[in-house]
Image 1 (cartoon, rainbow, N blue to C red):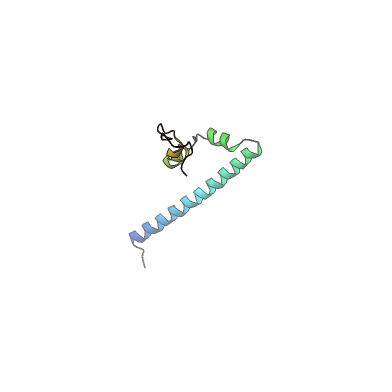
Image 2 (image 1 turned 120 degrees about the horizontal axis):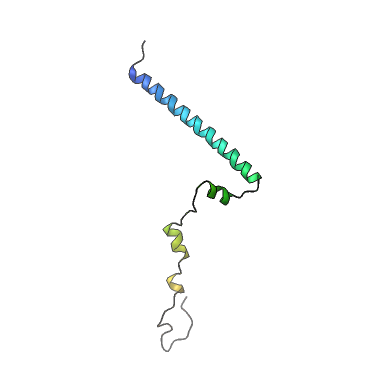
Length: 90
């Protein structure tokens, strides 16, 4: 029985996908070997990434918020209220 054109296209598409996945795996393995070689030469990860053109990761808004002082740490111009001692409420 003769294959339909659609079946042939599906087979070719599957072959291309398989070759692509194989090429990715081989490229990643080569990259791992190269990076390990650079580490053996004493080059640190930051230098490797910088030389490859990667920039430092920017902080997400959530990370930035965690480093801001909380409202409890800020100075309050009316605290302590007149007549109260200087201790903060917990």
